[in-house]
Image 1: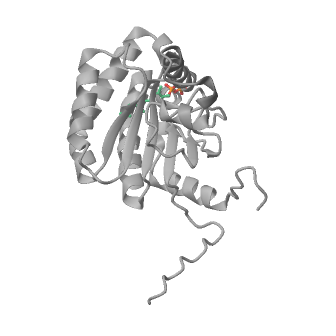
Image 2: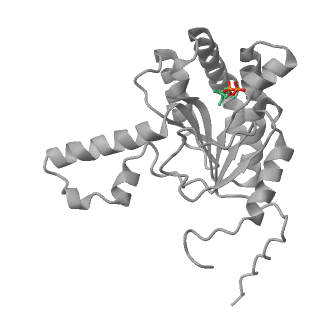
Length: 247
Ligand code: FPP
């Protein structure tokens, strides 16, 4: 019988491709201000970085990528910025469908649907359906998303089952909460990347990032390129992951 060839252990400093990556795309406004543009131009230019990140993660074999595109808190931004942001998200879903198909990417949406307009919901649902047969990376766009809200929504469903008498309180464990997250099938992020230098989680995937490695890059999101992604994967490769145990 042929013995499987052992994969060489990564050299320190080598790039290690995580199974699952989450990104807080920050610094669009700062990028625009520094360039002398209005804030929305930063979001516009951020689309290039989204395209690069999606295609490069898919090419490298990342299995799941979650992008924080619009948080529950972002509803408090000026209405004009919200409208322009949703205009960009809709444009992305129309114009990048070909890129998603070429890269065999499956699109998902994470977040609350209640406040989303009919147009964006239709485009999200259409793109999810259109890409459902792809066998490559899963790309979840977190839109109208909050980590606390996701846990609240999961707990509310469990409470309803307890009230209906179909679930015993003692049966509520981590697995039960996991099953009621927006996308229980997505693996927890191994790596959380945040741009623009801020060292915060900002209500992103609170349940799922328990053991994620965090890499903060000073670059503003519109300037994020494949080389920054590779640098994050190299930093990830240098981490020792113990998951609370002793190595
Ligand atoms: C944070 O920058 C960024 C956002 C709130 C929106 C992110 C949206 C995009 C990159 C464009 C569309 C996305 C997709 C997936 C097509 P900020 O405005 O808070 O920046 P600042 O902190 O410098 O002001």
